[in-house]
Length: 118
Length: 118
DNA sequence: CGGTATCCCTTTGGATACTG
DNA sequence: CAGTATCCAAAGGGATACCG
Image 1: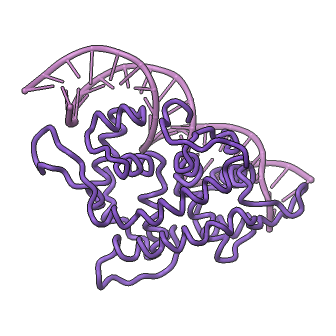
Image 2: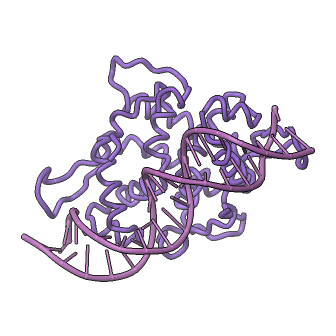
Image 3: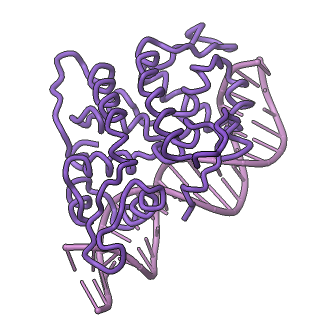
């Protein structure tokens, strides 16, 4: 597992890109903002492979965007840290931009599930 | 090559994530914002593999974020479209967030190159 | 300069099974 | 429920060679 705390690009965008330039990371955080905090919830909502989810959760914990509650043991909840909450403006930008530039004018906007549509 | 115009997630974030959830795409756009518009410039500044660059440029052309000048033939320049320019606020957010949450307080912020640091 | 093609290895991903 | 393990196929990535 790569450490994301040690992503040593001197450029803030480069360092952010190392973390956020991953589709699953982006989608997991979206689900977390929408209230998901359980392993199975992410699996169910995103249709993500369990191994892939495990690896992304480790990355997000390492980067300090999620915290486990409780820190050790099973049945954890994954809760957003302040660092992750600080990403909300960026997500708002992403949603606006996506809506304006990646949809036809008459095309319906909705929410997930990713698994049903790609 | 997947078509990014046909990324049919009904969620704007899901659709944006399909495009922006790729480290190279993010970095290529950063370089373009900083003035790069030639194939070799992207290779030199990012240390990106030529095949990887070709594939990402195709994605960005398909998504309407870049345009070729001239449209056909060789010696093309890759110029940012209005859609891509509209991403600047998102990049600004990303830079601010990265600077605040992915660096030590006393750590120096700089720019690329990615190739020299990861 | 602006690519395309090839080789080969590593990573990722889906499916599925298993454990406490 | 919350993962870990395994298998295998597909995609991605670096190095390098080649072409007009």
